[in-house]
Image (cartoon, rainbow, N blue to C red; front, side):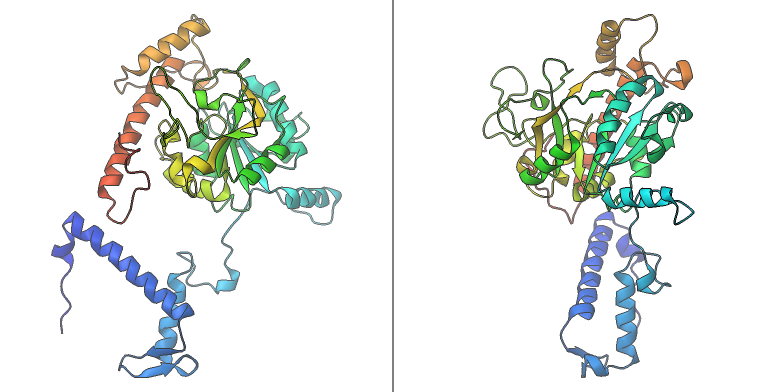
Length: 406
């Protein structure tokens, strides 16, 4: 009997999606059945066979099923040799030395990661941040967007940190390429921070204790209202309690009430200092677009990665708070403009971006207003991609179908 020809059938996009979806469901069912199924199976002739006395055909099927359930590309390897995960801990080439012993001790204690985009002009600010995390046995990873690496070597913690250089690249560009979930799988929490943050009232260890107790999968420290540049009310520090998960705003635009369920009223953190659990980061990493490196629009979709109810699993920690210094870094200001003038110009220019090339400044950096225009353009592109993905997702149910419509 000839098998049906699937080519014409699968030329239609709707049929193709349905076919592949059903195929994966069936394949997964058979895989689970062969691995954990009962003692009896039916062979090709329809005769029941006991698991312990099956023939070569059943054994071949079992091996094939196990291969399908392992990481792609590892089929030629014995399963026991497959190392699925890695980390960012450094291992010295010579064992037995005092240095290797110290490094090994730190590696055992390092269960959390701080990754931060830095430039040499903010060395003092970054030093204060890194010292606090280093004292709590964090693994520290610096993303050098200005290409200057050697000038950090005089700091106490620098030799223990990982340094990655990429000229004029953003935090999210680095994160997509160097923080793959399988690489950071051994870390409980990933702090993906900007460099312009004051940490006088912040302690990493106490912060982690709070988010563990509160069950926060995605979080950020609150901002000191008196000293910070605050862009969104939900990030401002509340003086009562340890954590807040929503805000109330009955006047002006963007009102938030008790029954509000969408960001930024609830289920939302800003992108300057987010903290992700291991599970949440695995989801967020896949949502970061390779070419949209400013990540505008990603904040409103983080709730999909909250491992449950975003209004409960996302929050702002008030007890351990920071100061947002608001120092322009990547992009900077033009030399002939004041900070206020440049900020105002950037806000106005964002709405009129027309896809122009970014003008280059000193050290290859771009004009700040052009950065804003590029960011706004990426926001529009991300929103369009999200809508197209939702429209094409036959095998996906939107957990927030009403609140996420734009």
